[in-house]
Length: 219
Image 1 (cartoon, rainbow, N blue to C red):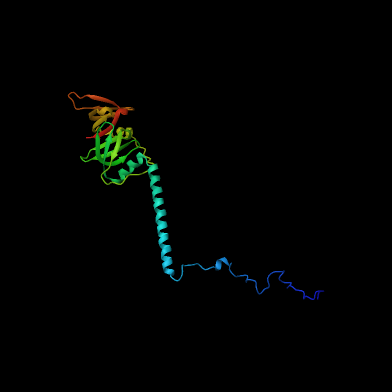
Image 2: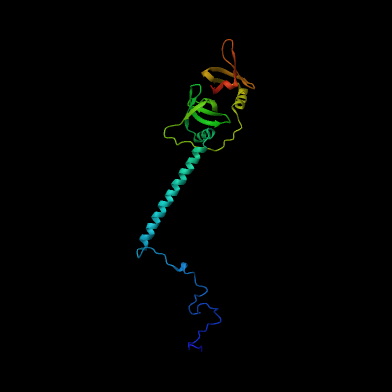
């Protein structure tokens, strides 16, 4: 006993000054935060869950609309003329081409090359129109917009097509800048000139610079 008569307090040597074993949490007990219960809004749990579900659906729909709007903006920004023509060729639907010569060519896009498109008209004619000769393309009413930014890799050019087709000496109608037209037999295609022979008596030969040719119809 001390001088003041107080009884000294002794500590359990095995606890090192920590809480007595009776007050300590078991070692395998979960953290206190994890043991907190979730408030589901009272006894009407199903009503609360229904409200949460509805809010989640609204949030999901809003995110879906935002993503769709972003993807559409990306499509618009990346759209190319070649990609649009490729899409129109796959649709197999009639279009109307407005050309630099002032002419209009109506038909279905059957093929597209590196610098031209090939159409089949309502009368069955094949028409090749160079890209730079196309002022606008009009689709049918209520057709969805063609938005395509894909890279179109086609090796065949307008020049190569004419060279190959000239072997059969087909009859053609050539339209040039200024809306000049030359009809006759496609006789030959040189490095930068197209030769056409008409059916006059005697036949006449026209030499048309390749750069001046906007479209060729096979009649």
